[in-house]
Image (cartoon, rainbow, N blue to C red; front, side, top):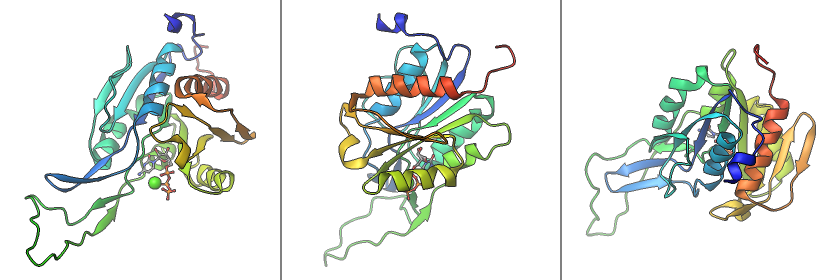
Length: 225
Ligand code: CTP
Ligand code: CA
């Protein structure tokens, strides 16, 4: 009902969003993952859809239903997420990377369940770095307009501005990790070439609507507009 009254600031825009954690197998019954409920990414998918966008949500494992009118593709690993994103990124106007992507996958994962050893000896895992999905999309020639997220545990402003520069994204949404995970409210700071804009603590859907407004305001006009 509320959605009807949202201004359609993203009408006609195609928006790709990643959300949730990724999950990297150790063996068929064990995984390594990041702490993420998916709530912020799903709130953004809903807010973008309410603003008139055509939304594709590439989601890692979460307990959330797809928002109304949003097309969802489910993935498990960072590499699956990377392929799903790369399949459609070139057709998109905006890419919002909200997913908490596992930075490493297990290089020596096992096809069969690893059994406990009688002598108490623990397995050792080796890691390999996963592709950086956001950095790769941001580097595409005539690719979508990119928005990144960053959850930091310290020095938010410094780290977020450095990350924005490193990934070459015009807008990066930062928050302090301890406060954001699994909560229904969030306290975010928007980093752009205009500087840092700190929002008050807000329910995630309200924060998402504000991010959508900020994206719409900054987005270059299309040929038809
Ligand atoms: N991201 C991504 N693919 C990855 C890692 C991160 O698309 N393999 C995206 C996230 O979705 C987020 C942004 O990049 O939008 C920043 O993620 P973050 O983990 O904060 O950055 P990293 O570059 O991985 O740096 P670090 O974890 O060391 O802080
Ligand atoms: Ca990371």
